[in-house]
Image (cartoon, rainbow, N blue to C red; front, side, top):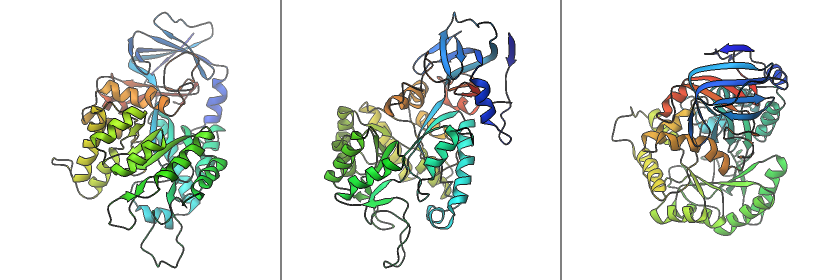
Length: 421
């Protein structure tokens, strides 16, 4: 039996997932961490056996079969690969270039190369699955990136893609140009019966999840207002559900959120302006909230906030909505709107959830088994359980006590392939 001792040094440049995946298909690993967080509970002294791309056993009495490689993860916690609930791999931080300029001035080739780099950074940060909620003007390139990752051409996390988000006609951007000139938009515009056709177009193009906007700013500088009607949202959600897809709704106003809840969607993204009654309705209807605390935090810092209290109004609004939703016992998704800030810094959202009062263990559940359940992929990933894909990470310390240790990734396995030096 061979003994591998960590820490490993991650390969961030010369990186070949093809070779790793091929090697993993007939490799058996016995992982020996100090403790295992299985997606809900922490276990001291557990070991995990991986054969090929699957977890085959987990527990204190697991032993290595003949020919297995033993991996010593001393003083580390092994846990499921983290799941990013709200990402935009085709965006990069807004302090590097504005959203408008990314949509209008960056070529599709440039944006795709950036996305490849962002996918690698996300994987190396311990996020082995992402729900990517719209290419923001990069067409259907997310479908191609997902395929390239699945085929081992480039390294990256498993992807659930939304292709083009769907917005009410006239209610998105970029804006501020001569009205008679057609300006490429960051999403697909639709109204009335064509909203259902738009849903079906995105699904046909490869969408795993349908993203719609229940509210937005009609003009730059205005407050958000409801856009798609209740009937349009309901018809769109029904069409998506008929096709076996989940639905994510951008909504930050009480009326937009109310319409999204009535439509029967799976998640509301942002939800900053919810009321006590709105959050109670979300709880009753089983709609999860993806709070994206990191997005307003990042934008505020780009605008000069140094992190000291009192925080800017947008940051305070996001925190208060998050806490009100938790008080109403709404299921919370973990997703930061990554792309507004740097890919690979995904843990930022988990840190802010903990800083806002959510216990570390609950944050970890949200980022693993919780997201997997909400996104309907818990039969594949999100837990350390026999039969699931061997997407696993190990960190120094105990993240059930403090999620900040998730920045100390020492080990990443995706589909049984060890991604390390």
